[in-house]
Length: 222
Image (cartoon, rainbow, N blue to C red):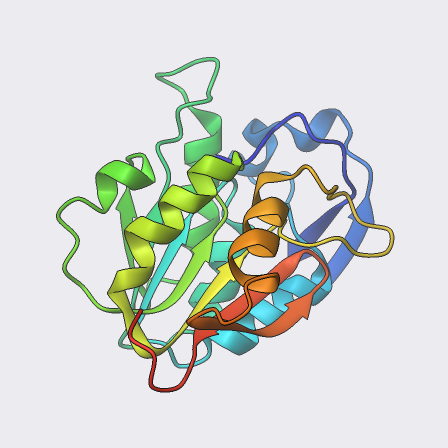
């Protein structure tokens, strides 16, 4: 899950309109569930557009860490009409378990387009992957931000990527005016495993704000 305590500027995603603002009392997911506001994105408008671009026409997509569903909206909009979007999140941080307004808000936001096939997997990523057999065209790693957890998600999930599949890491780089820092788990993992590796089997293909997109190097099967 994303860290709910971090203090950043959020981008509201409302159709194609983005409003950057500071959190206020209506940021509780209850208000998204009842429809008084759109889902709050934990990414920037530029990141939203980049997610759509890299997910374009993908047929099998996995997002680890859903929150209110704003990034899932980007993936849903861009994916192949016949594709499947798998959303992996245990939604375990709710203070009122039976109500779980975060889960309710996410389902309300993402289920708005009934023409796309969405599969909800309410489990921790390490549990969801145990019996996984589907090839993946696009993978967004945005769950537990501890470095060891990012490392685990990478090792668990990237073997299922198709030859030209894209893996995106959120909160994985420093950028001007951003919220990330050198001690962020995703930043540390990407720097160690991909950026500072002399000959990694995967290569960085694009970086937008805190997002890092990687693809397997040609002829590599690692």
